[in-house]
Image (tube, rainbow, N blue to C red):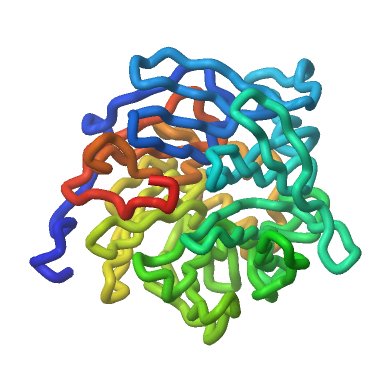
Length: 341
């Protein structure tokens, strides 16, 4: 790694972690605001607003989530399941709902409407993530067409895609043939759109597309093609130097990719034996509930996202699929401000 990179020799230990929030349910994606507020996706059907003083409130949509229970495995597969979040230009919250298979827009008081639930006359599929860019365009990722997402945890399924939604225009698919499409992010100049393929024939990886007038072109791998054991990348975010940070969901790792494309694991809280069992099942296309749910025992079980926040954008918050609180640590470099910042 370039010695001028602020992450040169940087790593994280569990003792570096602090925590915010309590009794959360599946805080997969986190949004941060300048005042210190955090907004976390919540499996009860909405978001949790964590204020700078640590107090928090659940803002629910119109979905009935009364049957949801902490630790209930079924909540990962049925009913409302807010996943990726983004702020609109007006401060409302865009929600990619992994349970209802649609893109929703929710006011901060909870009123919700469906923004998009079909594409080309067909149901969208498993809507995973949503991102708004500086031109107010909305980019939406779809993980798979499989109704049960665990069926997409195989090496050779490429039914994921990316949708571009622009107000006043018909939504359209701008990239397809992707493996378990997950988060997407733009670099500082919005020249490239970076996309997570959580699984693949050689494990998960990051790819990128050159973006020209809303068209995605010249797909290429960014960073390592092979990450080794537990290669299931999920969430990504850029820092202001140009490093791409990310999580690996079932193996509970945090990685970075330098601007030059060098990849490095900087934190690993996974159970190596259970991750290996999952890898073995994955490459045989035999992943089942028991093997999958045996993983994820770290401080943020099933690490799912990275969010920079705090007044100096040096707090790094880690979202998770099975955690009840949000760990965070300090970065030596500030995050790249998102469009709402």
